[in-house]
Amino acid sequence: MIKRVLLLMLVVGMVAGTAQAESPQQILDGLVAQAGPASAARGEKLFRGKFSGGKNADSCTACHTNNAKAVGSHVKTNKVIDPLAPVAQKDRFTDPAKVEKWFKRNCNDVLGRACSAQEKADFTAYMISIK
Amino acid sequence: MKTASGITWKNLLTLILAVGGTTLLIAQAPANDEAVFPMPTGKTYLNECGSCHTAYAPGLLPARSWRKMMGELGNHFGEDASLEEPQQLEIMKALENLAADSAQASMRMRRINSAIPTNAAPQRITETGYFKYMHDEVRPSIWKRKKIGTLANCIACHSRANEGRYGEREIRIPQQ
Image (cartoon, rainbow over the protein chains, first blue to last red):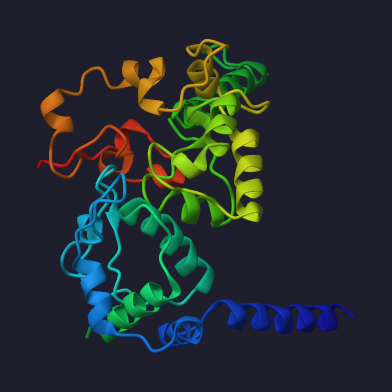
């Protein structure tokens, strides 16, 4: 009986685990399905652009630095931020809920509005393209 | 039984018990007195509250402060820190259980709480009397060092702050 329960837990755990962890490419595919084809070049422009809509930072690079492979630092708290590019930080763009959460917060903080599905797809494409 | 020096078994036993008991007390005292705060279990708190800043120990503020903060996450010190409902509820519960005025609060947490007026719900730990008292010997020039930068950056000096550990022996002040 106990064995069966353990086996069931293992199976449920594996299913739950695979449901959460995706590859960056799968995350991108999901965004492209909503937006249409993604452009890494447009994504890079978004990453490096200066904006005036947000209250806290004028750009992504304010915290993440000009190099998405580098360790960043929060503009206000100085806390160290892991690199954004999956090539430098393996768990980046592997959890869809986490990706959505940070687009929601950071687009609001930098642009003063939500990002479109196209912008998210472009941004993700750029991050994946960094080698 | 009696020896030449007047040591009886009874006296000896009392001595052993006394020495042993005192040793135990001394061994435990620093642990009780160390600045170690209980932290929420699981990864939610660290992931959600520790990605932009130190995962501050809930025991550094009373529950009323945390309740106010959790109700205003859309504008969290000017930033959008909004959470999905399951995480919101889980974190709020943990904060209430471990706050400075919670039922199982340590002596240190009670001291923190007692320095805060009951009608106040401070949002910045750095504005509480206890924080100011504990850091009054830190020169302004030290706070300005590149690796510290702000009072909110606990983990810059308290390297194990994310585990709720603020003990004096674990402080490492960056030299730049």
